[in-house]
Each structure stands twice: as structure tokens, then as C-alpha cells.
Length: 206
Image (cartoon, rainbow, N blue to C red; front, side, top):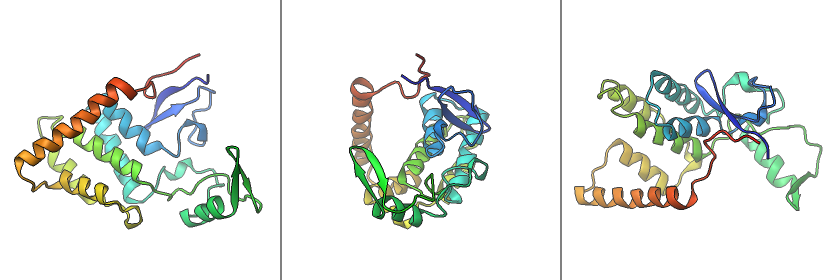
């Protein structure tokens, strides 16, 4: 089993493979999932420090620019945009027994930096809820303004995701409906912690 060690790089959490290479260009340290890993790690650790708030803002800047990782993480072999990446991987390749074969020469070794999914937005929103009230409300207005300024791209539209974001901003439902929604969500959390939680957020050594 490969060793996995979490480490901080500036305001991001990276899930390293302990190979001695901690440079931004090491793709094996979770580059593609940088925002998701960072925000969920902050939430999982119950980190409400100044570093955590700066990390939240750093991820907000990436989301606003529709980037999965900072420019300094690029190696030069990324697909130029998400459309080229999709075309290359979905239309010009076939998968046989888990291995992908390209019908034309594969010019790009990695996904595009702008290939956004809903995962980082949801993880970031979860961290937003975690950080609210961490300084007795001192930074709440700033956090709320930042959260409301980030919009999810139209091509990622899903009714439940849009509804979730709307409720995080302003929930106009009756209070007993909100309470029911809370316990429904709490049941999912409790069930996950008792039955499905793994060691993803822990260092794993041989």
C-alpha cells in the first residue's frame, strides 16, 4: 500500500505520496482535487484558524477564476480547455479492462485547468458553513459576501445543487420545514460516520 501523507502548501492541503517530491508540479499529490481536498480537510479537522480562513479565500479566488488549481501547478501538458479534454477522453478513446487507449496520438497528459465539476463548489460551501461564527461572528459578513459572490457555472446545473446554494444564502422555508431538513441531513452524516467513513483524511503509512 502506498504511503499517503497530508501536508500544507501555502494555503492548500495536498495529499502526498511521500516520494520526496513536494513541488507544485507533482501530480500524484492531488492536484486535480486541490480545492475539494483542501476544503474538506479543513472542515474534517474542525480547523477555524486564521490559516483556514485564508485557505477559504484562496480557494474562492480559484473558483471565481474557474480554475481547479493555481497557475504555478501547471506543467505544460494540460489540455488547453475542458472541451478539448472531453473530446480527447470521451470521443477519441476507448476503455478496455480499465485501461484507456487513444485512437489518435495523445498530445495532452492531463485534464484542463478549467475543467470544473460540482465537487469543489460543494466542498467550499461546506467549509463556509463550518467557518461561520468561528470568531464570534466578527468575520461572518465577509464570509457571507465571499460565498454569495461565487456562482456555479451554468453547465454544472443540477436542481438540488442550486437549491442547496440558495438555502445557504437565504432560506425562506417555514421553520418546521428547515428543522426537518436539518434532521434529514444529520441522519446522512450519522449514518456515514458509523458505516462508511474511511481513513482518507488520515496519514496512511506502510
